[in-house]
Amino acid sequence: MTPDKAKQTVPSESFFREIQIEFLIHELKGPVSVIETALKTLLEKQEKFGPLSSKQERTLQRALKNAKKTREMINDLLEIGRSEAGCFLCCRFHLGKAIRDVLMEELETLTIGTISSEKSNGQIQDLETHGVFLIIEPQTARSEMLQDETKFRQIFGNLIKNALRHRKNRIDIRVFQENNQLVVDVSDDGPGVNPEDHELIFKRYVQANQGATLERNGHGLGLAGALIMARSLGGDIRLKSEAGKGATFRLILPMTMEQPKIPDECTIP
Image (cartoon, rainbow, N blue to C red):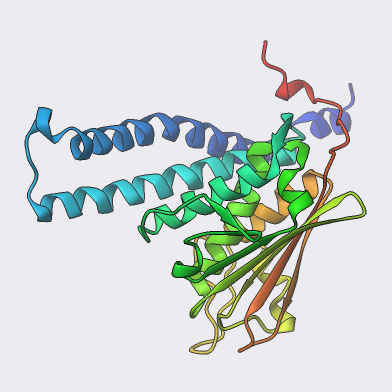
């Protein structure tokens, strides 16, 4: 082998850095899970471990809320890595149920309150009380999707998180099918995004910020990760927004994912 060819086979520093990061993310799952379980146990089994004062209960609830957020971030990072590696787990799942589950999880994480999952006239009851307006096309609500359900839930969850974080009073969610594709519009009435910054907010570890008029803050991974996962599933995310006029993020995904060739690194021995 010539020196040039040998050079080409040596992994880059960025490769080793990515491996180290992925290892750390995997290793963090265990401790975070233990912390979350312990906090839940203290809150839910006071008859066994002793009563809590109202101040102690609030402190534990705040800690539990942040433990859940940490777990979600870890899962997001893992799914982004799997998407980039071409790892998928396709299955049939009920679309309406997945959407309702994600909405309730995101709202409960914000400690907004108990959310009802009953439907009425295409909308989920009780959500409007919290400024969330959901309309699902009846046929779509009954449909099954053949996709990677975990990635779908995380993409949709990231769009909901973003809208809840930046809204002034409300978010509107519209779900329908078009040309055998699922279309999900998530709109907020927040500060909006200047057209020249549309690409910027989909970049990892970058946040759009125009002083007092616009802030789209976070860990810089939510929207970037959602776009990576959506494109890995054969779809896309598009943004329609102007500064001061709110934002609409449109998720487009094929109802049936083409079965990809599974890379060796995705195979479990």
